[in-house]
Image (cartoon, rainbow, N blue to C red; front, side, top):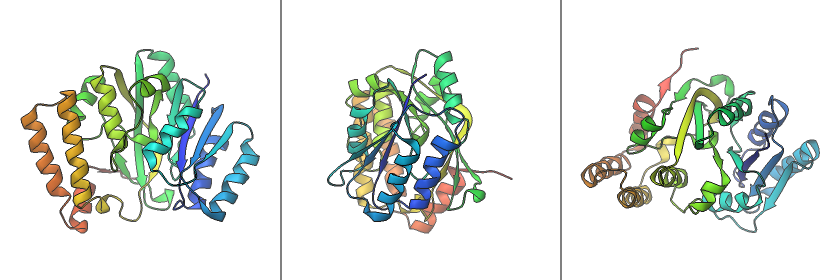
Length: 276
């Protein structure tokens, strides 16, 4: 089965992380994609440019690099990349994460066995900077009904694991600008349109979340983003107005907590420690 892998790269990425990402989706993967679309979201600097050029030599024609003259943000960059994806099925990937060797094989098998599903992802294990430290599971529900219910409160997919039908995403207008929630916004619109979605129960990716990423998701800009999310849920009628408003107040209050406390909440209640 032919499929595209879609990535967006910007100047703050670590060249070593990018190398590990490419290694995992090409050299270490049991099934290689026939097309990789890498969007350069603005100038990326000499080190990253050298890394990209090296992988262009290794991968060859399947790797297409789409340079943008300026940084436009993840959602808009992915929309631009989607234009260049020639396959109906597009697999997302972040440039600092690492796929399990059987990720694509498992997702292709699922597609072949579930023709009604248009969007699905899988489970991830999180690590700080060294993959040997991977020890935190970010789990998402697997069935359509579970996902639809879960989506009322939290994002029901791990974005870097998803595979989706390009035609459906394009039909719905692609990614919309929504601070740090471009993916959640899109998933809600897919579910709201009545499409069938799912998640694999398997861990198919190791996600790099170092430098206190979760703890930094705070402040008034995030509250504005929460308000945008509230408005979308009401428009799609995925949640009762009362429930949606209560959840908005609760989520917004978390955005005003000190970083240290917010980090503890993420790690204690929204993630599961995995014993090695």
